[in-house]
Length: 386
Image (cartoon, rainbow, N blue to C red; front, side, top):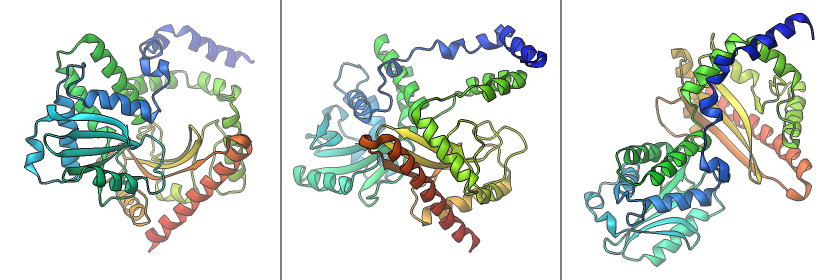
């Protein structure tokens, strides 16, 4: 280590005041992180079922189920005033009845809401159609409404019968309800922990205060962090080694752009030309990139995403993004039509992994996902060029 390298590291370590600003987050307790259940769909459905039951011991009464149902009616453009005038205390919540995640059932009102909750797992083949058929048989004479709940509200395969709703829509309602409620402190703490876990790990929101502080520290000690980053392998897991090696292989072949920085992100020349970088680091990701291809490992799957960021983009880029959103929908990608947006997912594909030959399976499936993503990009630009 030369004198200059030693100096920049020493300056970082001595800047205690800057680093202490992070204590608020590093010392933050969240029971869902401790229990490691943030990404488990069945646990989310259990919590939602408890909160939606107006007669449960959370003392929220019918406030959350009322807001939840109102959101479904609004998103589905259902013109039926009687649904808003019902006795919500007459509803009971069924969990995993005939394998359906949640059923909000009122025998008094002869109404049932069938809720399918998908965090990251994709639909099984004919799953929604099977649920539709079973409920139609079981609840003859009932008003039946079907809701497909996902992190960002992407469309169900059966858009004729299923209304798409998102955590982005229901979480603010829950926050408003719990903030004005006189319920027990233990319940408030649980709900606040749940809301924070969903916002961080499911909705993938960034804490703006944390982002600002981290950027200030990084800009102040940029040379020290660069030195650390160059000399430490951030993620030494088998997953990271395999995924990064595949990305390097595709980059060397000129198929993608990968910066060999221990991340699971990549770019392409064609998309770079279409959506150029910003002059400063103030995009949705606090970088100068306005799009990312990124890979995710989740349970028994590996997942590919293409996302665009809507913050601080020039009008020309915004127009190009509008075209990209339009052609993405035309080729069958589920894109939620919400503006303005911070992040918007244009493409998502997941593949299952073979646990018996895990490493080889991961390598093979990551290659398939990159090929699928590039094929999707071909289709996008074929339409754009027309």
